[in-house]
Image (cartoon, rainbow, N blue to C red):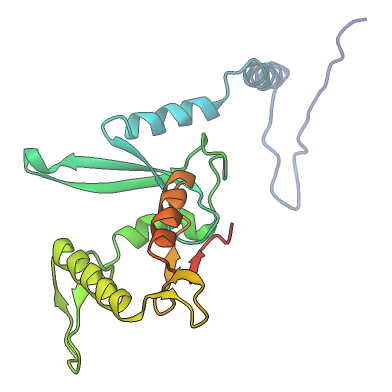
Length: 214
């Protein structure tokens, strides 16, 4: 069957914009180019891998760190990319965050809050260090992590020593501590949750909850 011939002609006078004149040879060139482009895309030569390569090149000099999103109890995995090295007089900073495709919870996806974690990290109002406000004072003072943990441990021991119940009035052994509670975060792993539960129960603490409620 002989190939069909399509003739495109442009009227000499038109009320609107005139259509550009295209010869048969030009039409065949455009058709061949379109066919070649679609064929290359079907064979895998699409621009998507090329864009992915550009992205990989952008992150090639960064340090990849796996972490857990701190927002809710879902516990999505994230990949954080840091650039710079404090040891080489270059301030290190997180420049990109995305979902972890190998994480069993989110498989690389993130909700809008998780996708905006880069703003959370670089927020000028982000609290980075422990602070202490004395009783009756309206001023918060920055303290070290060692001082904060020592103060928490001291207050917990004082409260436990004063309120620990070893036996009930009728002589039953209970070993319970009811005046202090513990709230665990869902960002920890199952192993961390297990150890936290063991440590809290060993102190006799009954008020124990977890953000994930699992």
